Length: 204
Image 1 (spheres, helix red, strand yellow):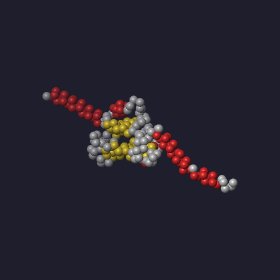
Image 2 (cartoon, one colour):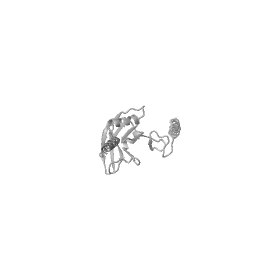
Image 3 (cartoon, one colour):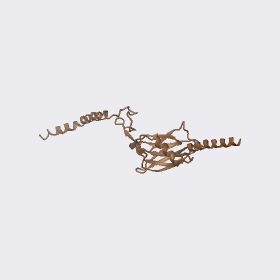
Image 4 (cartoon, one colour):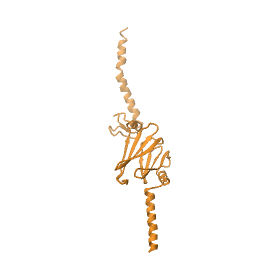
């Protein structure tokens, strides 16, 4: 009986150790998981080792030349369409009863991006129904997007079609539209030379 209890104790201890490493991975394990999730043609330019939220959940944040990767308990969340994040100044965590925030500040422009992790009261991350909300500073929208030449609305810089006016962004159509607009502007300006021509016969 004692031998059975000892075996059961070792087995349960190993099981809880696995759970501990799963929910509270070490910095090396987080780094390894991030390196495995990032494509081989990208390199980690900025990395936070073993940062903890107020609910004592470790969060690793890495930046490449293409996207920002946030790893929390081996849940990879990727945010594309952003400029490189290798110039981040600080990482601060704030908490409310139902969610925590990760505040990232860039050193070059001092613009703030808030990434919100929805959590329960006990701090357990809702893995299946987690919402990812990003609040971007108004002044930073120009750097993160492009303006539609037709409706002047701001869209993602990699968008192929404007969601508002259905304008198609393509390298072939854009110069054609500009060339079509230029003659129309010249026609509008054409009355001005005619007025100058009328003034010329006067002195004659």
